[in-house]
Picture 1 (cartoon, rainbow, N blue to C red):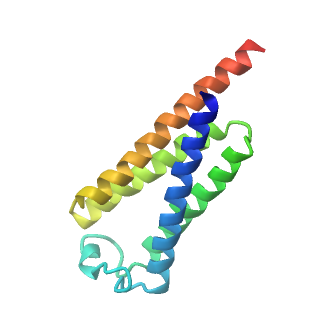
Picture 2 (cartoon, helix red, strand yellow):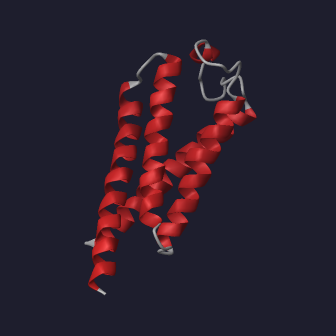
Picture 3 (cartoon, rainbow, N blue to C red):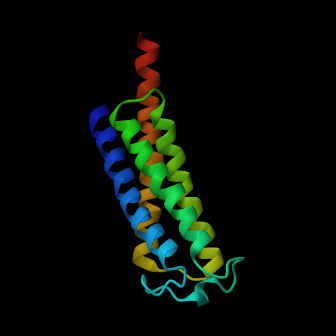
Length: 138
């Protein structure tokens, strides 16, 4: 059962990494947002004039971190489960801040990524508890 949750965590991390790397790169390479069909009006209630800084933040925190944590989970680094939980909170936090700043909720997309964040937290928690049980039995 442990292996299944680890695989689920890795898949979720890779999904988040790939989409955030793509989206972050798109925002960094075209800060106007036109390439990704994101109007600058999304930023009118934010401290940003264009999508460069949000793109950098997305690329690093949800893209690179997720990729790194997926590799760490694959290689079974000690306490990787806590990094899975951490990434779930990063993703959920990113979404909450995004919704506050753009003052809109994009149903299917936000629900999908909120679900990924919650599933990362849940699978990470399950993995952490299983690790704790294994360490206590030795």
